[in-house]
Length: 89
Image (tube, rainbow, N blue to C red):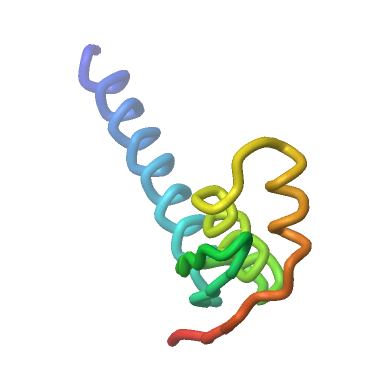
């Protein structure tokens, strides 16, 4: 009698792990390295995403997180055109 709940718990755990792996692998379809220059400083960050636009926007946000302080600076930094954009395999 106790075997059935244990087997169902293991099956549930395997399904959850499978869904996590699938969603993680599908997000990394596009990889990009973006370099941003803001207020005389430069930062480069790599990001992955399900679309090219999402990956690039994430890399820009990550780079601006290092360069900018405060909401106004972050918005200004994220509006800055990247110095370099390198698409990775």
